[in-house]
Image (cartoon, rainbow, N blue to C red):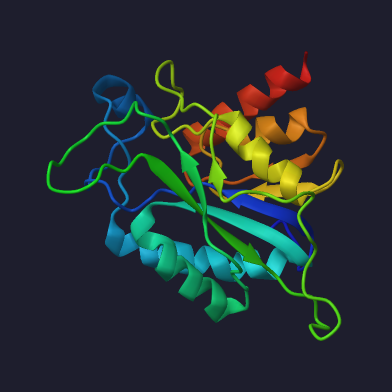
Length: 222
């Protein structure tokens, strides 16, 4: 995150590629034609998330929170990697229940009908006196009532704005800076603008950066 100084970000909220999909070199136009997904795989995912966590810890303010979306098999590794760079990971991951509209691919196991969201905190330097800031309210780990985006997607793995908004309102105040390091469609940025937060989005794919800019510019123009 070259544009951010140490201890400069109020909240990190991001939905990285899950590292569970088939290898391919597909870009935005190819996805539009075929409906296939990312070029990430599990062998690259580990180094990607480890590198992200180290930088995230550096730029996040002490006492503040980070949320990392993941699939169920990455919960324990992410918690382990987060602790290795200095984060604490109190409590269970949050679970966003996506409803019944999922694609079942196996009959010998349960279907994945949810996202997992790992909660990380950067402790204050004086941990004996202060640990980290509280959330804005008591919050259940199970998130219900937010529907996935089923059609008319601009991104192959687009999460709903209200899901990002849920965590933004739990762990930040109006005017604070939220960082999404894998910004994709820009849904996190839209949630920030709608709740009066500042936003920084990063993505390796320039198509998604352009999509995010168009989306946020249109929102600011209203």
